Each structure stands twice: as C-alpha cells, then as structure tokens.
Image 1 (cartoon, rainbow, N blue to C red):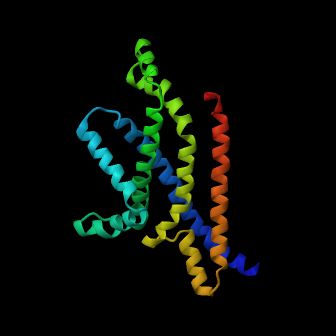
Image 2 (cartoon, helix red, strand yellow; image 1 turned 30 degrees about the horizontal axis):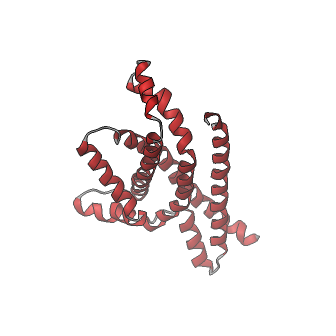
Image 3 (cartoon, rainbow, N blue to C red; image 1 turned 60 degrees about the vertical axis):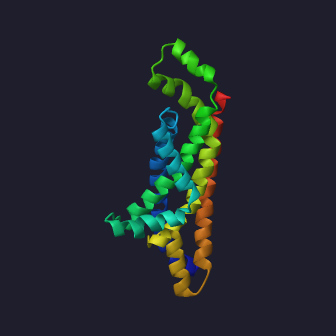
Length: 213
C-alpha cells in the first residue's frame, strides 16, 4: 500500500491529461461528425467524393499512423504542432469520421415520408433538422456513439507515442523505474473505472430518451 500511495499521485496526474484529451476530442469530434453526415446528404458529387475520401482514409488507416503523420511528417512540409494539439487533431479527425458514418446511418434510417410532412408543414430546412431529424437521429445513434466513446477512452492511451505524459506513459515510466508491473495494473484499474462510468452514463441517457420508441 505504501508503494501505491507513492506512485498514485503521478498516475493521477497522467490520468488528468488522459481525461483532458478524452473530453476535448468528444466535444470536437461529435459535432464535426454530425456536420459531415449532413453535408453528405447534399447532392453535390465533388463534395460527397471529398467527404467519402476523408472517411475512407481516416477509417482505413491506423490511428497510430495518423498520430505519427501529423506530429512527425507534417513538419517536413512546414506544418508543425505541439504534442497535445497534434494528438487532439489526430483523434478528432479520426473519430469524426466514425461519428459521421454513425450519424449518416441514423439520418438515412428516417422514413422519407417525414421529410414530405415537413414540407407540407412549411418547415424550413433548419426547422426540419431541428424538430424532426435530430431528435430521431439522436435516439437511433446513441448506442453506437457511446460505443465509440468507450473506444476513445481506450485509444486515448496512444498519445504516449508523441511523448505526452498521459496515464499510460506515467505508468510505464514508474514500472521501468521501479522494476514492477504494479503501476500498469493501477493504470488498468483507472481505465476500467473510466469506461465503467461511461457505460453507466450511456445506459442512463438511453433510458432517458427511450420515450422516442
């Protein structure tokens, strides 16, 4: 217990960085993904081609490779980022692509008749999105969105490749220094707590919006 109390402050400090990345990426990637999903509904082929290419690249290449590309490769053409902004940019672009596909599926699941009803009611496009599309899409995509959020909680450990002192990096440093796996087990426990909290929140939110069924 004395050893745990000794290393725990540094691990919690690293966990703070992990949580910072986690929450910032959620705040940025979900709205961006929703925006991309709605833009994909526009019947303009060059735009759809560009968006599909973006999604294909983001989903078809490993997030680790994207992190390395943004932080280590882009500076060679004059585009440089600090460690944390590079990590947040890579995560946001990657997860926005996944969220875009999730929202696209939700939008396409809405019956076409409801769009016709919106026209009969003389709703503007913004009113149609706000009062008809979004409430239904939100309910449809909730489980998938929370699954991606759980994946994000685990994937956030990849920021260590950029030298960001997150939870995983702090635990590896302590484990190498003290020649013990205890810090790694503590880090695993912290990740489990985080994922457990996200799972609990997801169940509560899904229950709250169950009246849309």
